[in-house]
Amino acid sequence: MVAAAEPSPQPLGQELPEAHARHGEVNPGEIAVGVIIGRTSEFFDFFVYAIASVVVFPQLVFPDADPLTGTLYSFAIFALAFVARPFGTALFMAIDRAHGRGTKLTIALFLLGCSTVAVAFLPGQAQIGAASPLLLALLRIGQGLALGGTWDGLASLLALNAPRQRRGWYAMIPQLGAPLGLIVASGLFAFFLGSLSAEDFFDWGWRYPFFVAFAINVVALFARLRIVVTPDYTKLFESQALQPAPVGATLRAHWRDVVIGAFTPLASFALFHMVTVFPLSWVFLFTRQAPARFLAIEAAGAVIGVLAIIASGMVADRIGRRALLGVTAVAIAAFSGFAPQLLDGGDIGEAVFMALGFVLLGLAFGQSSGAVASAFPNAYRYTGSALTADLAWLVGAGFAPLVALILSSRFGLIAAGAYLLSGAVCTLVALALNRRLAPPPG
Image (cartoon, rainbow, N blue to C red; front, side, top):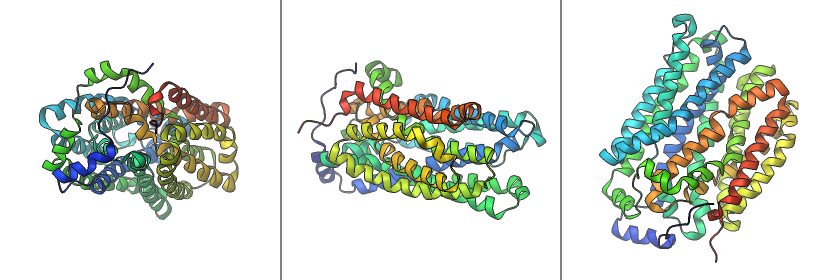
């Protein structure tokens, strides 16, 4: 049973005008821009690495393995970032408490950028032998530790300053970074795959998206620092009690919220990989389709995802966030029954699979961050939201491509549908336990 809620802050619709009166430069639009830039840069990094895990690393790092085994090895290294991420949160929360949010963000994004751009210089097994996968694993762990430190609290600040009747709208804003990052990453890889020879692509073409990721991280760093280290926002963070609490204290006080919050978005997280990383690996390994073509389809699907995420904000404000998450979990469970047949149904089946998948993903994923954050009182919200997101990604996403590919390669695509169904069931169980997500009376 979830721990009793602590006293809630004053009505959120009243906080923003007061903040404006005290700090004239603070406004929700500025926070929203910082949130979108930060999340887009993080997801762009995520998808650049994920796409390379399918089309590059199996041949570059595991050339002696057959394509399926090489991809499974690659997905195992992919998962290391999600294992490392909670440790990064603990480390960087300590830096935040000792040296401030600006120092934490600078170190974390520097580590993320260096780990990402270093992948662009990765020698293959032909050059350095067994050291190649070890180096890739080390860089992936570095990315995971850094991602744990990129939590800046802006999403929570945005939610706390949302008028009560617009909470769903403000909750969806951080989630826009996922499809935006996918659009850019898929477009870049599709361009290089489609315009270069195979020899040139594997020699140097695949490395360019990692350089772009580094550049985007630099832009994101300055955009976010411009907000989080200014006196106006520092005072606003303090007035909202959005300060880094010790990880141990947060878990002791709200471990139930962390655990339940980690399972609440599993339907959307399972679907997240079913329409992005996993289908790319399936198409690449088991069909004769060009990966550039499918990446273009994914980019188009991500545009649909953007529209669906925006729609989730409007729908959640009308029917409630908990109701929307429950309805979409049931819809994802139903989708799992025929998704495998669509993915294996040729050009039309794939197009329908991607369109329906991104519609459901946008509606569900659009409200998953709000579901995670709303369980915590302000004193623990900054650290609690970061920990819950870490664990949700670890449980729901970190091993998803690996597990889905193992199951589908052994038992057929129907097994991947069963995996998607399990995520929907977990979400429904978590929603039943977490009554705090129910809309407030009146």
